[in-house]
Length: 232
Image 1 (cartoon, one colour):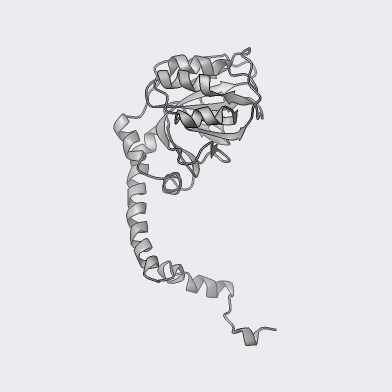
Image 2 (image 1 turned 45 degrees about the horizontal axis):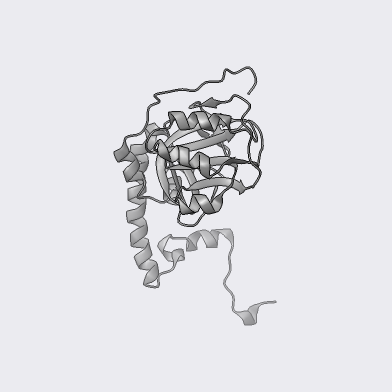
């Protein structure tokens, strides 16, 4: 983290609860496509099936194997926050377990996204506290080094600003900039309506080749259909 000051920023701007509720109706895949295939936090996997969350990003910048600043985040957490944890360098140690999740939940946190590992999977599953992380590890963390809370971070290769919307499901996690939420909701709704029509046509037996007009492209690329008897 170099010479950058360690900060714990209070009173960040967050999306309206109504906006988050509308985003929640869409899948991560739909939102990712709706914002031009951006915002996906690569390699983040849910620790249990059926995990789902939509909330405001409360960001944490921490050192590998040191979750001191996550306890500061618990102090600043507000209802509807998703804790987004970035690390100063690569790490697979568990940065969060059941006790810290209990603290987040007491202050309104709904989920966590960690560019590292977590542990206590059985307990987190039982309390229905969804976590998306790179790995699961029994190796815990120390509490020794200052980082920052509610500063811009890069988590899993994607920039996250405090107060961005975060949506997670079985497919992963996507971040939506706060200023883009209304546009992304509108485009996501259009995509779902369009896909519903395509789904009906596919179920009726039409081929994607015809629905999406791909035959001309295949011809341009040089694909040839031949009978098996004509093969060399």
